[in-house]
Length: 144
Image (tube, rainbow, N blue to C red):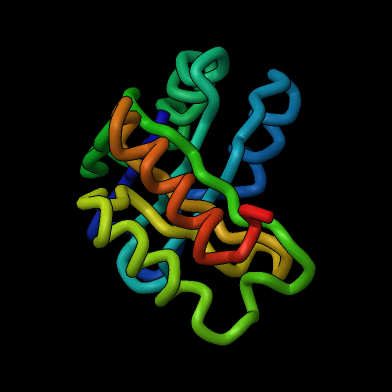
């Protein structure tokens, strides 16, 4: 599940807070990836399907009244993992080129939480997802 939350009243403060993160850990909610923007109170989370309802009920306690949320459940998460892969020159361009070539529009691209991974959220499409994986494998020379 991809959850986006934005609120103009949050200003430079991201939605995420220590209390939210503590509550998520206490309830054993597994957040696959998260990102927040420091310029506009935007936050994004990727949560596995078994944890999405618990995540949403906890998040509700922290939402501002003016917050707008988008919840998308038909999401596939693609992880590109390797030593310092997120810092390698041209990785994002290569990933974007593969997505474009198969006609897949990413929902989110997360880079920076770890230098060893790039996370892409995609629509869970039976044709585009396998085509994207195959093309990425080829472009990264992993076919051998």
